[in-house]
Length: 281
Length: 46
Image 1 (cartoon, rainbow over the protein chains, first blue to last red):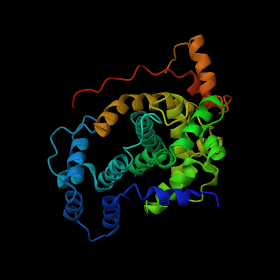
Image 2 (spheres, chains in turn blue, orange):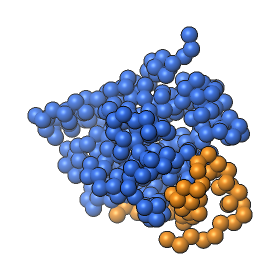
Image 3 (spheres, rainbow over the protein chains, first blue to last red):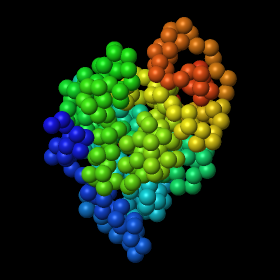
Image 4 (spheres, rainbow over the protein chains, first blue to last red):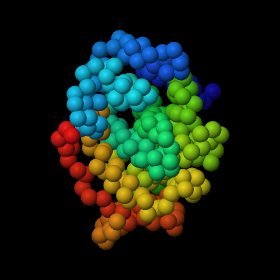
C-alpha cells in the first residue's frame, strides 16, 4: 500500500511534539469565562517559551516604547490572539529545528514564511479585514507540510527540490510526481492532527489551488497571493526557485489594484529584517 | 513607484523564475518589473 499524507504525519508525530501550549490556549480563548491570568498561567508553565515570547514582543519588530516584563502585560498590549499565534509559531519552529541544512536552509525557509505572514496581514488590511492577525499566522504556517517532508523523507524531498530546480517544474508538482502527494496535503494532515483552527487547515491544503477551498476562501486567496508576491521578489527561499502559478480568480477576490502592490512590498521589505531577527535569534 | 530598468542578466533570471506563471496577467507584469531597494539592516529599537 502506498504512503499517504496522514500516514506520513503519524510517523512524523513520533518525532515532533504537538504544540500543546497552543492547544490549551486555543481552548481557553473559546471559553468566555477565561481571564488574562488563566492564559498567562498556561504560558508561564513553560519558562523557555515565556522568555522567548517576551524577547519577541520587546523586539524592534513590535517597537513598543517601554519594556514588557511579564506575560500578563504582553497579553494586554499585544492581544490574546496575537500572542497565542506567536506561541504556535515558536512551537512549530522549535519542533522542526533539526532539519539538516544540506537539504534546505531553514533560516531562508523561515524568511519566506515570515515575509508571507507580513504580506498576508497587509493584504488583509488592504481588503478591509479587521481581524488581520489570523492572516499573519496563516501566511507563516502555509508551508508547514514542507517541514514534515524534509524531516520524515529527506531523500525524496531532496529529489523533488532538485527536480524543481533542474527539471523545469514547480516544486509542488515535483513532489506529487516524486512522492505521490505534495506539501500542501501533508500540511493539511498535520494541521488536522494538531487540531489547528479550520481556517489554517484550509490555507495549508489549498494555497496552491485556491479555487478548491470549500471554506475560508478569502483566507486561502490572500495566502495564495502572498506566496506569489513573496516568491516573486523573492524574500527567502521555500525550496522552490520559481514563482508558483497565480490563480487570477484568487487575485480578483481580493479586489485590489496591482499598482498597490509595489508599495505593499516595500512595507514588507522594511519589516522582514526586524521580524526575522526577532524570531530567529 | 517608478522602477529602474532591468539588466539583461536580471531579465534572464526573472524569465526563469516566472516560467510557470502567466506573464500576461497585470499583477505578474508589475512583479516582473519590480525592483525593491536592498534589504534594510535591522534598525535600533524604536
